[in-house]
Image (cartoon, rainbow, N blue to C red):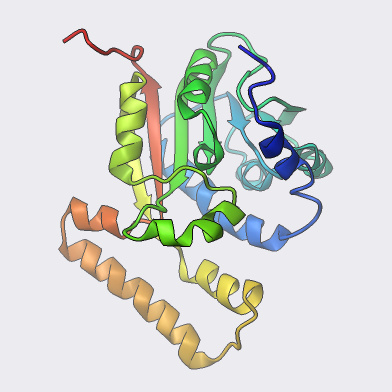
Length: 258
């Protein structure tokens, strides 16, 4: 695989991305991402796992505190991310390395589980990365944000500012992974928790905090939960802010053979 395939513009955009900023925000989001990971693979045990695109190690830190996996490894394209991960001194983390975004420097089937959490939306060549992940893993967990909505093209600047160059719905990401030869063993749709919404509004956006606004956030969340409870899967997925899949590899891309 061409080790230069990661665009120079993309690589440079992430080089200094994790230089000590937004630490609390990422740790808060990572708390729920780690929970989703554990929920979808409940009942399975994995010894050796790899997180691809591990960012600053926020998810790994939560998994380390849970003592979820005895041997963890990490890959990240950003030097600043790797520095942040190393600074955490995680007891179960055995290696962390910079990689080119596509070529995973490990042997076939080396890992019991590979985690790809909120990475695929940043990737220029999704299928290339998925095939490499499938090569080194036995099972895979993928989580993506559900950004795709009507009128999303009018918010391009917002999403590009977050590095999101791909948009997904639960249906579209299922099609993507199944067409690449993965079998969906379990999945989970999740909404942004009130705790996260409050942090974003009152801390990130700096809006004034008061009891009424806090209660409104709580009420909107529980109203959506009620609607989901009373409705079917389609409605449930339409409210999703994130979608988590637990996958097993089950073949390769197979077209024009049916």
